[in-house]
Length: 353
Image (cartoon, rainbow, N blue to C red; front, top):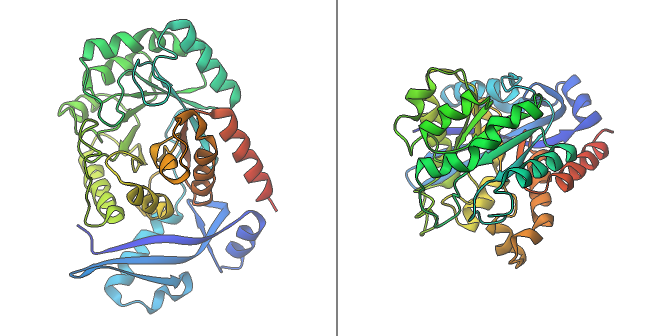
């Protein structure tokens, strides 16, 4: 467990970011000159809790030697360019991961696309609307859901996976599964990314089997299991505890470091936990990997707005996406691709100047 953590903050965009980088008053985020930061927040774990210290980047040299060394190491990861290890994806630009649930019981769209023609109609719609990643799942991991048999899960997704690359060669195919056998079968069908909501902890053979493949992975945080995760989740400090989780799990992935970080909004978190993670998301840049966040239609939007029907949470989804985009998040997992793409395009146009 760390004692000190570094969060980039006070961001600038567009021409202002470029000007401040050029005059050395700010640093580029992830090697991009379109987003910059001039301050950092240092978190320190103490016996009585967590203390924070907000300083300008030009004051780092005034820190004591021990803290300065850690902060400089973190800053080197924060400013470094992210390698484009995911097929057809450039991490300099925001990517939209369209959700395709081939399940009868997912929280928002269960049963809508669980036949071949409906599934590909929805894929076509999402791709035309701007999705450059499609995330296919055959098992619901909504709060309270139970694990299903591997054969059932594979039966739900195999036809889409077997035919996806025939139709969409330049679209990234992600498979949302917790089971090692399905991971391997998906890769043989052409999957470009494995997205495991358990952080590769559900199936003890997952990372062992994936060593034979040079496959990128989404490292996702979840406290407990889908069945139990929303039963009074607790943390000492949700932000730093999840950071520690990622550091530990990254060290366990030995075959490659093609990793995308997902803090798991709604997976074993209260409303307060979710808002803390979203508002401080830039802490995770110091891990040195691209960040993916899925806020689409989730319950925290209902808790804030009172909108019970998940399909009517587009406004809350877009608000969270645009905030996360302003903090340098690279990938957004969403249901409403068209609306999110439009919002991102307008946001980026406003920030050009």
